[in-house]
Length: 124
Image (spheres, rainbow, N blue to C red):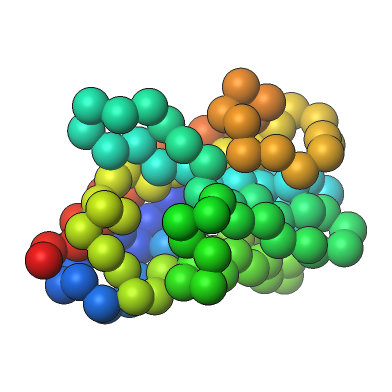
């Protein structure tokens, strides 16, 4: 199983980016998929996750209304659309899936497969 996150970059405050998570060796539509981020000197935190099946999305409080997670099952990909970006969103962003399907959670210990991370830098 391999996950590859991409789409990061440098953007000004208020700008937008779309992150992509591509998978091989696993069919993402059968699993919950989450995005996490880790800022320098901070612990990894869950940002958003999307259920398999009903596609229900969950968000960490600070990104609600600004970020949108979505799936493209035909492409075996998951996206994170990030709007109204703030400097505090600066971090390395990772996509992740569990080894088996689980109840929606943003706790990283429940996820087993991780992408390599993509850096998002938001300038003020």
